[in-house]
Amino acid sequence: MAYKLKSRRDVTRHPVLKASITRGDFERTLWLINGQNAEYVLLPRFGGSPIAIESDDLTVERLSPGQSLYQRLRSAMTFRRKKFLDYGAFRLLFDGPKTTRILLVRTNRLLTRLQTRPDSLAIRRYPALLIGWGGAGAPLPACAARQKPALRIAIVVHFFYPETWPELAEVLRHLPYDYDLFVTTVPERADMAAGIRDAFPSAQVRIVENRGRDVRPFLLLLEEGALAPYDIVCKIHGKRSIANDPSGNIGDIFRRRALFDMLVAPGRMQRIIDRFRADPALGMLGSRKFHLNSPRDRNIFWRVNFADMSRLIGELGGDTALIAPDFFEGTMFWARPAALEALARLKTSEGFAAERGASDGALEHTIERIFAVAAKLSSYHIDDIDGLSGG
Image (cartoon, rainbow, N blue to C red; front, top):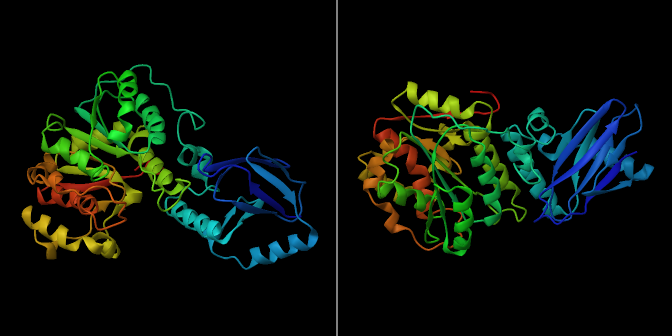
């Protein structure tokens, strides 16, 4: 028989659902993406022991023989992996309202691209890629004493959504190397500044206008020379993207994979420091999964930003006709401040408009694509990393 699993949680408070499945020797904790009135259909493989499902997040309904047959026929006609999850002992089909199913498929497509689908080995090993770190998320290894790195490091964090700060702080607390911390946020979050300073007494906390999202605050630090004393700088932010997904799942998935690849994966900071030390021409490094640098990324690279990008490329001494796609989607990366000096001299932070929720075409989208270009025009090269593969 098939089973209908229905979310009983508010999607804005519980973007990920938990269930435990047992069938004979098969035992698995499932982490499933939530949605508005999200539903899943569980289809056990034929034969084998009875299946047991336990969950505080989902109601479980056993379907009738006729309903089960319908769902099996539906499953037999579903060939695209983005439309279902396969755990071997059973398959899960996305169900529920059409808008929710579409969003679940879209989210699963992103997870497939990142190799972090709920039914993947990666999520069995690192569930934090879906549920995050700290609080109700996964624990991080204890860090008794930080080591002094061979390079001087700064980490720049920007957040607008207050709910992202606890997870960012949890990651920062468990890093194994010394670093200086810069935190930027908007006036609406100014009341959080004292708590941030209590948690990180040496942090520089800046309250900035809500212009340019996470891009302009980073540019301000570059332009005033605050980052010049450092050999390398890590830029991260509290990405959520709730305009496209009220649950925040898509933004959470981006943020957590970037944090994993750049900071959290085992041995990650050591590997990054070693790569920058060994290669003085390395100007920028980011997650391989968000590195768009192939000819097929050309349309994504230019989009409606061509005019502004062309102007800035010209001011940096480049030729638009010779520029190939190269940027990190989501604007999280490690960089040498020296590689971005020419961009800092342009003082582009003065040109950002007030936040209007634009999905593309604003100056922040232009600068997102210009960071790597600026480094390359200054004779540095760009590389990437993948925390799951160890590369």
